[in-house]
Image (cartoon, rainbow, N blue to C red; front, side, top):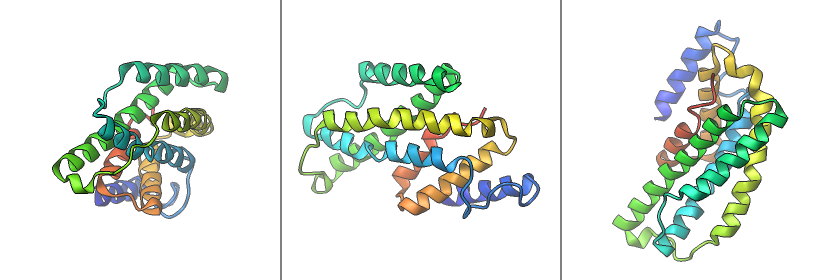
Length: 185
């Protein structure tokens, strides 16, 4: 997966005129967005641990609806299309599920690797709720880059940088990749 991201990033740089887009080492317009996305995704471990301990379901349509409505409501005041922000936030929810299902499967197969405690899901949700306006702000700042022909490559480059800086494992890189699908228009 990392190799694929690097190849895509390099192709995007060359397609943009070999130098017009940032290299995988240089920050670009999408780095703040991908950083906030990674911050949100980092909570998936605690959510999975809570659900593992409580035997709760990963799927929570009522909570998802609340998150999507909050993101949509935050979009218009920042000059963003609520439907586009809702799509991006839907990707965040889907990415969290990728990580949660992966961890739960691992912990079920290898119970010795499972967490011993159960994080307070209410506290985790408070953290998640605080990330939503940060993400919408970052999306607003990056909005001009959304329609850029090299958007996908720039997002991929940002993902490579953030994944490397955070030393994400393959499960979390898969989650990050899933979280970024709707960023480019």
